[in-house]
Image (cartoon, rainbow, N blue to C red; front, side, top):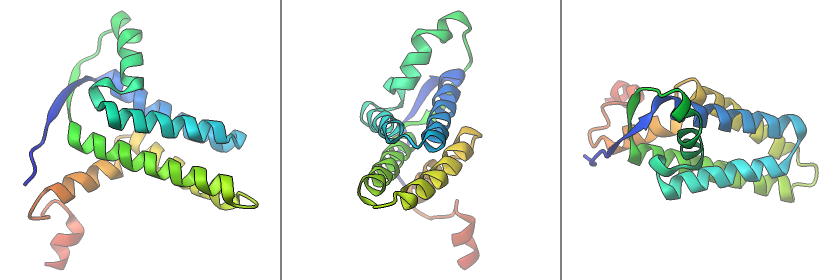
Length: 151
């Protein structure tokens, strides 16, 4: 079993991060903006490299709005969040490649729509990448209902 490293994050900071990335994804799709795809990918990469406590959108919220209206603390598994951010970066990087090299770019925009659905689900509280990490980190695999059914 892997060690979980829980870090305190302000609840509204984390919500701002989730909602902002979902909105950025949908704006990129709506305006067919490869620059917004790149911006979302860079934010995800920086969040993974700097870890969740120093992620750009978390810090932005903490130094601005959190001072005006403090929110409660929630504990996040730093390793799961880091994996989710690397996974998100990989998806945005792959989408950027699809958009750059595909002749009509239709595949890239369809893929971005799928990323948008996943980011919206994450913004609403179900982060599939974090869940994948938690399931994989559990050595018995008992947290995955799919694996439990197969046994």
